[in-house]
Length: 131
Image (cartoon, rainbow, N blue to C red; front, top):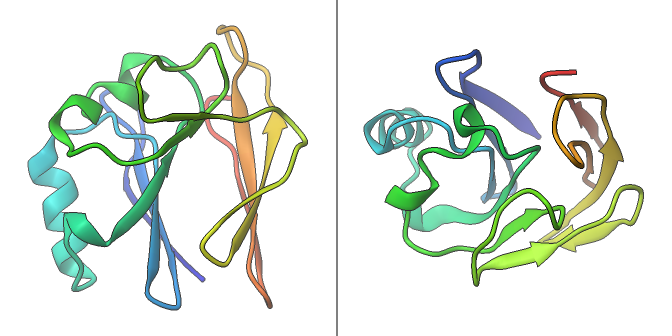
């Protein structure tokens, strides 16, 4: 499993997690151009993204979502409102492709922020932000 932090900070946040040809996007608070450049650097395109995971609703994590074609958005009920949202709850595991994902509660100034524990057959990644 590989991790590519595209941008992290108050001006925008977005991270790619990829393994076995599968790709997840965590947060989308950046412009579409920056996402496309990051994807190009790993020989991928927008259509290769299986789903998006959102940590919380602040605009530096969500502002760029409107520029993407619809894809499943996994987040807590309070985080984002869209027809594409798949509601998740802290500590309830779910799967996307071969990734097993466990949302974990974090401490931040929003209603229900989460980080993620992402597991594959042989690796585990813990992703926390703004905590």
